[in-house]
Length: 248
Image (cartoon, rainbow, N blue to C red; front, side, top):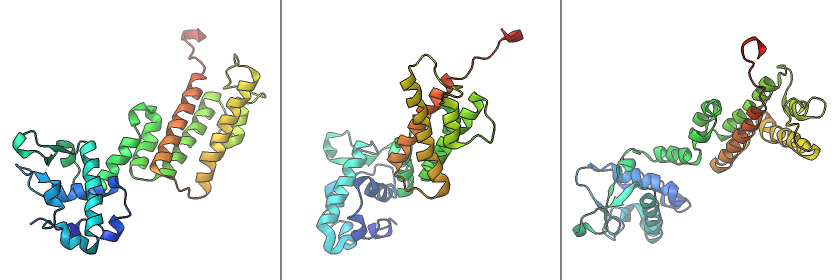
């Protein structure tokens, strides 16, 4: 027997505070509980005065069906539900193959996180360290791991020791006393700007996360991970070429 909306959706008061994409996860979970074979849905039937949402919504009925309609539109846009192709079923939809793969509202949240961070554009070693954390929703740890990878890579490429850390390491690697990772063809101002970029990034995004919890949204965390990926590209571009046989 199908579960009623009240067994799947949060209380109506909470539902009305949520964004359409959050509600969409609960709506998809509700739709996916019905048999797949030839089962179609219509928004009007779902939210009508004789529909299953009446006892669930109570005095909030009109507002609830409006936010359900918003979530319905989001699922359509994401290709998780689609209109039936037959002319006789105009307005009726079915749950697509993509939608059927998302059985619970928590699965949709994981899908949304994955869509924000495209791991295929990340350097493989960075992807291995941060993508799993990010998709679990552990954003501050994922960002910390990304900027720690910069620190590790700078030590490796610049041939520094394990005791060289953080902002000090960045200033050594890109500063005028060493210039180990500096593009010497650049003018002095750009050299200093590069040093300050790395030092600032480590000081702002790696060190604070190592001392306290930093509340980051998924969007903010993804942007910082992409930035870390860009900085890693700069470090790799400064890696000395490998010597051939007998130093050639």
